[in-house]
Image (cartoon, rainbow, N blue to C red):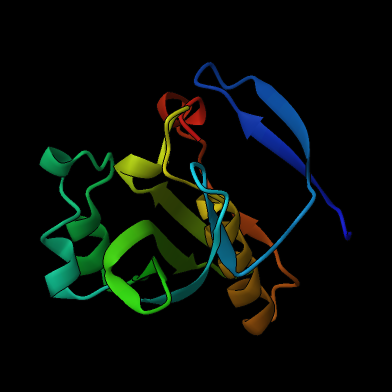
Length: 154
């Protein structure tokens, strides 16, 4: 099993640096059902106007994905299970910076917290962002702003 170590240097709300070390022990193109243990292959594709109807704050999403979608500087993607592209498992917004990719990501409301339906959504989204960074010649460098209110729901 290949392990990847990540060091995150975060700035807290009080502008104090917080460094996090964690190990990703498995990177896959799948998510795992927390009830049955079954794995489902995933795919990432561009978000459409039709998709935006199901990703609103009233449906439990934290970010304003319509605003992300309408920002021409950003590319917005959805993570779905192969052959089930109508149910969005997570969303990702990418901004190409001069030397890296900046990302915003969110798991679907039913994939957050201790009762989430699927494991592995954030890992899939981050892995895709890293892949895009490599494709743009940034050696896999990505950045994001940690959302403290979402950290405990992953």
